[in-house]
Length: 55
Image (spheres, rainbow, N blue to C red):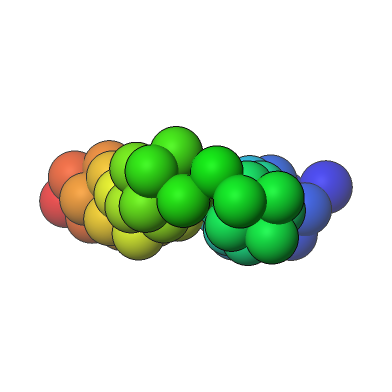
């Protein structure tokens, strides 16, 4: 079960990436540019929180 919890942030980031691509395909470029930062932000927050919990 912990294995799935560990990969949850990656799955959420991939969904955010697909959402951004979907917006770009549907000619909503401004929204796609805004949401393109979400996956990286989510993964960085996850890494920082995981690092804090390990210490």
